[in-house]
Image 1: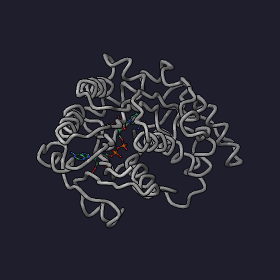
Image 2 (image 1 turned 90 degrees about the horizontal axis):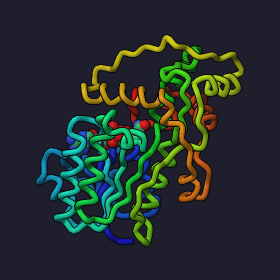
Image 3 (image 1 turned 90 degrees about the vertical axis):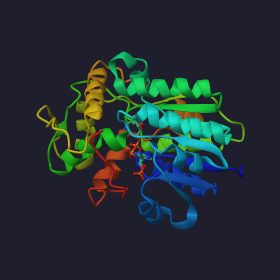
Image 4 (image 1 turned 30 degrees about the vertical axis):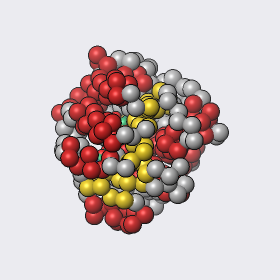
Length: 298
Ligand SMILES: NC(=O)c1ccc[n+]([C@@H]2O[C@H](COP(=O)([O-])OP(=O)(O)OC[C@H]3O[C@@H](n4cnc5c(N)ncnc54)[C@H](OP(=O)(O)O)[C@@H]3O)[C@@H](O)[C@H]2O)c1
């Protein structure tokens, strides 16, 4: 494997995990970012930095020059489909041979009429297929690093587990497991062209998470139905709608499916919620074992 891999969304929660794994494998990495200084702080000269913006086609063309493979990720927002389609178009012009896309959760795409985020990801998947570029699409379930962080914050304050999703079970997945699958797809000697639905290994309700927390903390832990619903100020209208729709679909039980894709691809079991909570609650700083300042609402 010698061709350079372009990582979009590299400075974000999943992208950082993907870049560090690629560097461990001694892959040649170029990162697309609007924040050169932040990328320099993260990786110094170990990556090639392409300063650019999804909204600037010339910067995408420049970032794609000489690239063999693209990791495609952009944040949820009204420009998601346009942004990702622009990366695909630039990749096509540059002769890229493989794209690995982080898509929405399977149940958002299957219910795209009730999920603006799922609809946007579905539009990108269609564009990707139409491009003719070989591609792997990863559809991960709700991430622990996002969905469980309000639980971690509440437990740290001595509170109960917030039950934002009623009594629905969710098979939360660790972003590190997603990154492992993504890197497998990005570096496979024979390109894997498929859609992978990625789930955690167990579907848990808030009550079951409270029982796990009680075991870890050696104190009684219940569930709280009074968790706040206010959005932080940096969350736009599109994302607020998308998050509201996630909640509705999850409450219907759609995020509870389990499969063994992580095990099949990585050869090990997905990380458990208990293991995640133990590590996060043992961490001494609020950011815990990851220092990238993860947004924790989504
Ligand atoms: N959280 C979940 O449970 C979940 C489940 C399924 C799917 N997903 C999907 O995962 C994705 C979010 O991943 P994440 O949480 O890792 O993202 P994130 O942490 O929010 O990071 C976003 C990244 O996008 C880059 N970016 C944003 N705007 C850009 C622009 N205009 N031009 C170039 N780069 C830009 C940022 O780079 P710079 O700031 O450095 O430019 C940053 O690296 C979404 O597509 C979401 O649908 C999430």
